[in-house]
Structure formats: structure tokens, C-alpha cells
Length: 171
Length: 193
Image (cartoon, rainbow over all chains, first blue to last red; front, side):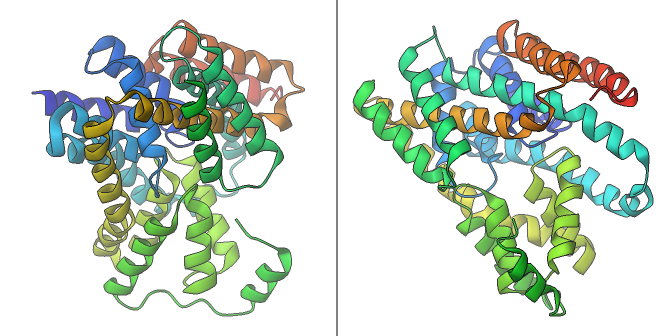
């Protein structure tokens, strides 16, 4: 039963993952933590952190959530539920893509989507960095990482390592 | 994605050859998955355009643009689109499995290790710090994406609206997304974005 819930929820969520997984992170946390109570916000943040250290697409965080909630079967169900519906869309759209290449609506939609994605990415940053009550140490690490990422061209992996070291010192 | 214009031009003059066998496709995507620490696109570009020369640079950028507009993980979509183009449904499945195989094993192993050791305060502090840094990466992406539209009041209103509804009021995205997209399309069609 829990596998079915997990699968249906991630399949629905996958249709909203414009711009990757980041923008849907707050929604995922709201459902998993607030609505279902499958884990604490602190657990969610830590699973997110573990997934960040892995290579590959960041959708892998869904397999960790699935694993935590329902074991290995949960991890497979969550990952496939998040990927298969959008894969089907990608499959069919690549056929239509050429036809709409010159359509002015493509531009209108692109412009409409950008501010949404910015707002949702900010919400993702806030949600992850504020698992419980606001904590200036977590916000400091997040802001230092953000400024490192915007002002230098260093591989983000090193920024995560820096965050881990700072976490070890401050927390 | 493309490192320098010079390199792109040089690669443009070489005819790309798509993978010849399903095995070659699988190994190619396997190495993209294995090498993509800190971002998949640079690894995808380096393997598919520079090393294996499956795609011309312009073709790579065009495929990325399509996959960015669609919902879903960009590179996951790219594995489906390209696998299908080269080998039909078998290609799509093989490319997708190749891409996810190693990162999936990695993340699951880490999770098992983490559940074993995660209760220790020192481990928990380090992992929490990495999580906060991950939050910072999202903020940085938002800043980069938002810079070109920061001067437009309609865009700022939409950004603030989405943030408050989702992060503070914690309204479901299933409600916020269609509403915000409708408002965005109205603004956008009137040239306000």
C-alpha cells in the first residue's frame, strides 16, 4: 500500500518537474514530512545531502526517500515513478519538437516559466536550509556556498565538501 | 557546456558518428553517469561530443534545449530522446539504464552506510552541513536564472509569490504551479516578462 502511495505521488510530481528536481523539493518535503509523517524534516535534509554527494542526476534523492520509506523496492518504485512519465513525454515530444520550433508560443511559455522556477528554487534553498526553526549557522553555510557558486567557477562538489567541513565545525 | 568557441568550431568540422551498437550506447551513458560529480551536463558534453563524437556541438545544444523545456531530469530526458533516435525503444531503455546504474548503486550504498552511522552527532553535523551547502547551490541557480529578469516588476512579483506560497505558506505545488503558470502566461503574452 505504501509502495502504491509512493509511486502515485512521485508519478504526479514528475509532471511538475520543469527545470529539474530543485523546484519540486519543497513540495516533496511538504508531502513526505508534513502530510505523511514518513520522516522528520532533519532526516529529509540529510537524505538530500547524501544524494547530493552522488554522481548523476539529482533525481536520485527520490530513490533514497523511497529506500527510507519502503526499502529497496521503495527506492526502485520512487525513482521509476519520477522518471517514467517524463520519459514518455520526452519520447513523444521529440517527434513534435521540430514542428513547433518556430512557434512564438514557445518563447511566451519559456518567459512565463522562468520567474516561477526562480521562486521555486529559492523556496527549495529555504526549505532545505531551514529543517526546523531558523538556524543562522545553516543559513550562513547556504549563503557562503551560494556566493561561491555565483562568483567562482569551482566544481560544486568542492562547495559541498566545504559545507560538510563547516558543518563539522559549527554544528 | 561548450568550453570555448574555438573548440566548438573544430569539432563542428568533424562528422559525428552515432553509436554503432547498443553496448557502445550503454557504456557511453554508463561513463556519463559515473563521471558526473557536481553536474551531469559537462560530463554529457565531454563524452558525447568530445570523446565519442556521437553528436555535433550544435545538435547537443539543441537536444539540451528540448530536454530543458520538458519536465523531468534533463539528462534523463536526453538519454530517452537520443537512445530512441539511434536504436528505437531498445536504445531509449538501454541509455536510461546505463545513465542511472552506477549513481543508483552509489547512492543506495551511501544510504545504507549513512543509516548505520548517521546517529553519531559528528556524522550528522557533517551531513547537515553538506545539506545546507546543497541548499546554497539551489539559491545560486535561482540567482543566475533570475538576473536577466530582475528589473521587471511582474517577474519579481511572480518570484516573490511562488516563494511565499511554497516555502512559507506551504501550499501544494499542484495548486501553485497551474495558477502561477496562468498568471505568468498572461504577463508574458502582454510582454511584461
